[in-house]
Length: 261
Image (cartoon, rainbow, N blue to C red; front, side, top):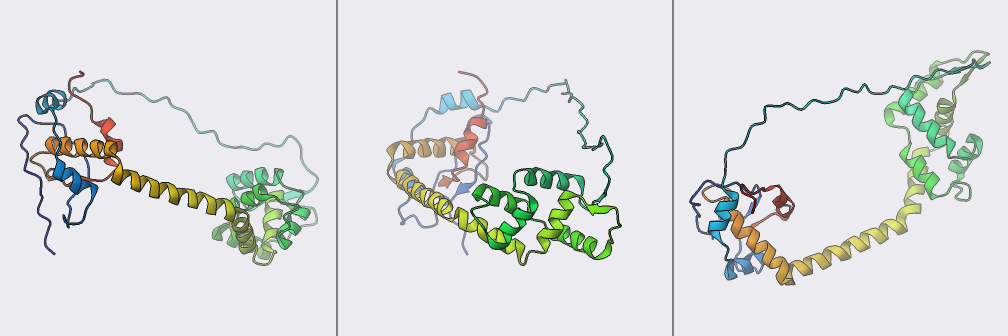
């Protein structure tokens, strides 16, 4: 497949210039009308002398002082219960996961009612916010394997019980197709709002596309950026572009003038 021959002239700035790091676009089919083809036909005029004065590639100043970062040790969680419970509580989850489940369960009905609501998808007991929490805290595959291994391999003694997060996890795994139930429940709760968000996003995207093709102001911004960028990038592989990726507009603030003026 033949490479597209650039339509723009090979610009040679009179002084080394700062570069605009963009992804250049070459129009493969100039007969197909695009905003870039319209800009190419109309052209853009700008002050090259002022551009060179502002964006000449002056040598960078080195800063000998090194930044020092404050040292802060991460705070670990070290539970230290004040008193012993009569029953010995067995655990198999890591501490971070246990804290997640503790926080979730604190916002839920008592475990017996919670698990029954999951079993029958009772939306009178669990609202959409509760279901979202369940979805966010579903056990992963590795956690499920650990839990099932604990259920099979650990024989609780007379004075032993599973701690609350482990007990909830074990009983949740006993609910048939628990993950499918919870995910489907969450999908049903969020369908209307998700559809509405997607419809709004689709409408906004269409409006933005129409604006890009019809707005003279947007066309002017794109044109000036294109021609100035081609001048800055003159003599490099980034020069002679027919267009550029729109993300380039967000990078313009990173292009600092050599002389403030």
